Length: 150
Image 1 (tube, rainbow, N blue to C red):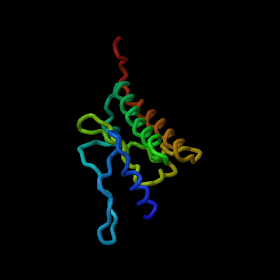
Image 2: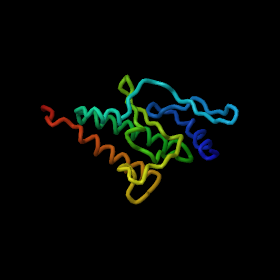
Image 3: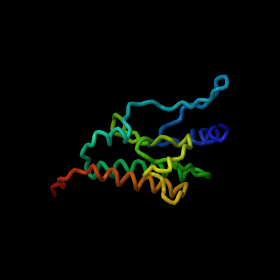
Image 4: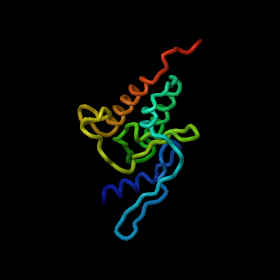
């Protein structure tokens, strides 16, 4: 818990429109808690279950917004914050059309058989980029069959 608490406090400084914001970290009796911002959203996993047709522009938007969040976490602090757990459950599609990435504050490794886990067990940025690549591959299966008219 001590390491998780240190990470959560570090992540509380992540203030980006595409990152789920931590509002408070504290302790009540012997229980530690983290309070996150609240909004109506759908996870990317839930979207995949509905199998909607997506345009290439929508897919590029989703992936670009996740990459913006990662870039901010990597480049705005002396000690970069890596996610290491990119998969559809961690990506939220807000009611207003925004994208939020959650899961920075709790380091929970991907299961060994997860398609989002790097096959060579790389960690850090390499793991995050592998997860993004797998996400892009999965999103590409939702592209509408009809090409856009030019």
